[in-house]
Image 1 (cartoon, helix red, strand yellow):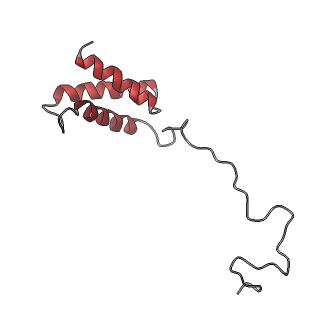
Image 2: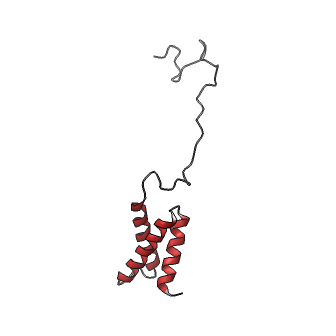
Image 3: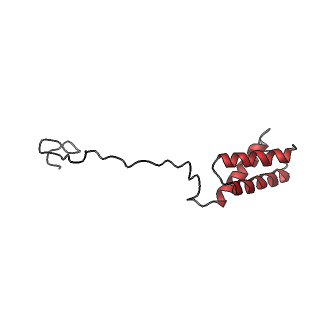
Length: 104
């Protein structure tokens, strides 16, 4: 495996792991390889893979719709319960939210 194949394989795997589709991840891997071929040097010593991965991730984010991004990672919350249970009401003796009896 040469350096170009290494970048293509690992960028594609990382994008899929981050929740992108296989097609978008493949396109991002091609963008990463293209950037690698055009780069003269990395932003920091030993960071060329990080640079091309960042470029591929930005490209992949632009190819997906906001509703499609990270659908599987979205947290689905249950309906939040209110302050009072069903059937209970604030009686005459209980204070309001601000601690006043008449609400003023």
